[in-house]
Length: 225
Ligand SMILES: Cc1cc2nc3c(=O)[nH]c(=O)nc-3n(C[C@H](O)[C@H](O)[C@H](O)COP(=O)(O)O)c2cc1C
Image 1 (cartoon, protein in one colour):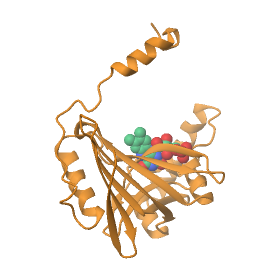
Image 2 (spheres, protein in one colour; image 1 turned 45 degrees about the vertical axis):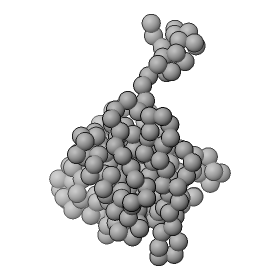
Image 3 (tube, protein in one colour; image 1 turned 180 degrees about the horizontal axis):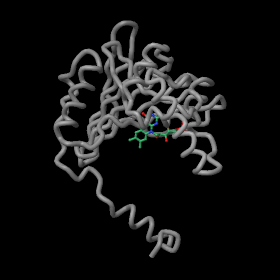
Image 4 (cartoon, helix red, strand yellow; image 1 turned 60 degrees about the horizontal axis):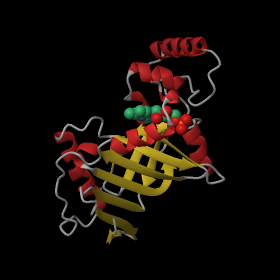
């Protein structure tokens, strides 16, 4: 039976029957943590990589337009620095790029299901600068550079043949000039104002620890689940 033929109740039952927090979950002692969130992020990321979490560097990035209407998508986290900046890269003319130009704030969420771990980051966003954006672009694979060079991300695609032609033309330009950088390609930095670490518990007594930036230091608070 296709989804559209499925009775409403069957959909609810299907969703209710799906397991959540099914794996063996790690311990998280929120009383024994570093004074700043980047070390703990690194520790949890290492744990996710060791546990074989697929694409652990993929994160949900939420932005909002000038009227505050939100939109989300998955992006790759490109870097995290000791000052508490989380980085992602995208075309500045895409929907997220336009939203960030109107409202330079973002929220990020990582979820590593096998460990029941979620990390949330929130803060103002700025472009990391032309040099770092160019370095990010030049480190991309030839195919993704050609695609990005078309500069049309999030535009309406009237005809898939237009994409083929634009990518072919971009690839030719890159062959002729391998140092070419897509003008709109932007490395964005989220300056974390808050970072929350969330460890699932099967009895729903989840552990939540929030770091909040306080000048040069970070304050820590536990949150109710
Ligand atoms: C695992 C994964 C990684 C992605 N990484 C990126 C990325 O690093 N940069 C990017 O612009 N889009 C990336 N995308 C595509 C975005 O999710 C999104 O479709 C695209 O950026 C357009 O978003 P927008 O229309 O909201 O601007 C990725 C998608 C997935 C599923």
